[in-house]
Length: 227
Image (cartoon, rainbow, N blue to C red; front, side, top):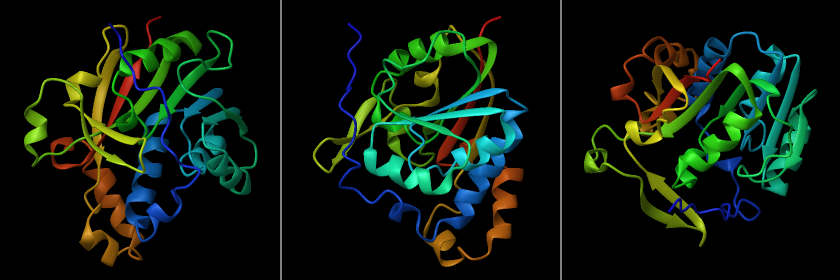
C-alpha cells in the first residue's frame, strides 16, 4: 500500500523566513549550486518554493517560471520577492498543470516532510517533458545512526502536524528516473556558519566541495526523465 502523509506542515503559523536568519552562506551556496545544475530551461516548476528563496534564481534563468506552495503566508512573502514567477497554491500530489509541460522541476528542502516520495514522483513524471531535468534535495546526516536505516522514517514532529522524515539517499531514488549526480551543501550549516554569516564568500567553498556529498547535511539529487 502506498501510504503518504498528505497534510502539509503548518507554515501559516510558522516563521519560515526567520528560519534563514544568519544562514546567508548556506542560502547563497544553494542558490549558486542550483544555477550550476539547472542549465537553460524554458519552463521551470518549483515545488514548495516557500517565500521564493530558490525561485528568485530560477526566474532569472528560465523563460517561464512557476512556483507552487500550500502556505498562503509563504506565497504572500514570495510575491514581494518575485517578478516573473506565476504562483499557485496547491499540494504536490495533484498539480494544476497539463502533462509534459516543464523541462526543469526543482524541489528544495521539502522532501523531509513526505514519507513516500513515489507519490510526488508520479506527478513530476506527469508534468515533466521527456528528458527533463529534475533537481530534488533530501536530508542527510553523515554522523547519525539514522543513515543506517533502509527506509524512510518519521524522526520528529514540530508544530503538531509539522512532521519530519528521514531516509538514506537510496530511498529517494526512483527507477523511472535516471540519477545523473549527487551533490551536497551544508558545510557551514552550523553554529560556526551562523557566527560567520556575513562572510558570504565562504559559500564558494560549499559549492566547490559539493561533490563530497557524504560530508554534507543536504543532498541535491539530479535526475533525468526518460526520453
